[in-house]
Length: 508
Ligand code: 0RQ
Image 1 (spheres, protein in one colour):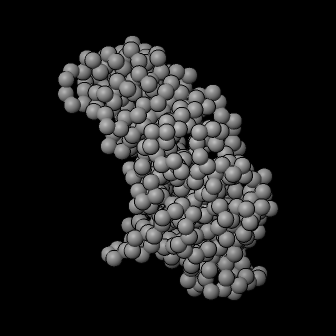
Image 2: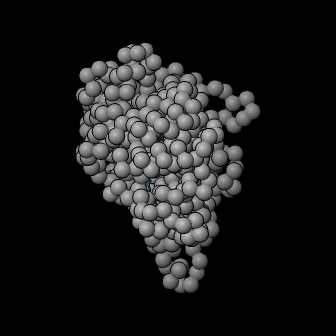
Image 3: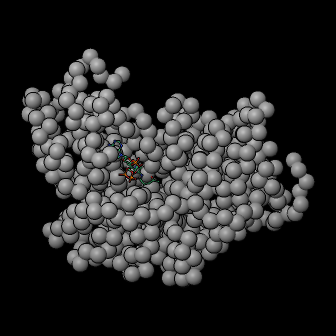
């Protein structure tokens, strides 16, 4: 270890490269971060430098990397570019890492995000050698005040053998006042989560660490590496309109209570567009959110008073919005609660609070199975994330996507999904820019007809109707010789509607 220059609250202040020199090849390292919000930044970059040096010297260097969810470019992208990741869980969105996973160079465990803290606490991942956690403050007695996400950091701090704190001076110290941290007890006799309202507080504003485990503090001063928000396009706006109209109709006929229900909304531009449409709809009341990621559109709705309050695991906002959050702290601190992912995504809380879940699909089949993760059943995109945590237990579960991808060469509505993340038993409503299919109470054939008519792109409706019609009578009408023909066409010819491929030439 290099020379220790100063102490902070009795902990040695280290250089990120000194920390990297202490973490051996093959170590399991748990980093803070749930999306780029609150992700560790300096130590992963130093680990990437070390990996490059070791590789140049002919030495192996790759880590087992655990986080709350996806991260910023200084973590997944930097480590992947340095070929420093051997194993990864539970979610990622880095282009380089995705390619390495799809080549088989990195082992990736795609899992429900609510499970990560308890997998950690139960020992299901094995030993956590190091935790590297971004914080705005640590005290000598082991209180750790986290930054823009809570994620799985409380569990990582609890379980890791050694802990490094990235003390980020650039992050607001007051975010911690919005944090509500509990580490649920392990079974048996685990008490129920006592949440009746999305904004109810049940924990403490800090996480706990055994001070003896803290090997050092690394001082940083960098903002989160959130990607820019792009304006909603016409397709996303059409999807959003259908969703907002659906909610208005549900409230009008009494299936959703007049005061509305808390909303969970996934990440990305579709989710932003939907929140905007809800905010603009004259017949929809002010509402609350119980979600895992709070994005920019929700922040604006909160300023306008349309969003009354939100529980989230991460704040993914622009630098200007982060500054505004700091300047108007009193306004936001009474309206925002940041929770660990085992609480923000807790299936029992989702059922208890009556959450309406809204997530994005890659493809949906005519019987309402949803693939959120694997293109053509093979290549991972990001991961299931929190979508399963919410969908299975939602009051109403909604999946949205454009009806076609890649300029129309791919239909999002297919005869059979090539990978299933959410089954017909959990998926209630499908929405594309073409329309909305409410599938509640419908048998498989009725679901198929509704999805084809309401959601499929007109170019694909005829094919899908023929598929259904030619598949013969059964409870779920499938022709196992043809159910993946559209995918086979795409893999072979680059377009799903290309003439059908002979069975002998299918992609293996
Ligand atoms: O590819 O970028 O190369 O053009 O997939 O698609 O339409 O831009 O949508 O960015 O919202 O991502 C499901 C991946 C959608 C995401 C998924 C191609 C398409 C494009 C992205 P290009 P869009 P989005 C909250 C909840 C799972 C996790 C989750 C996701 C790219 O929403 O990862 O819900 N969800 N978490 O062209 C081949 C298809 C395709 C396709 C789209 N059928 N086949 N490619 N694409 N459909 C977050 C957390 O849990 C933290």
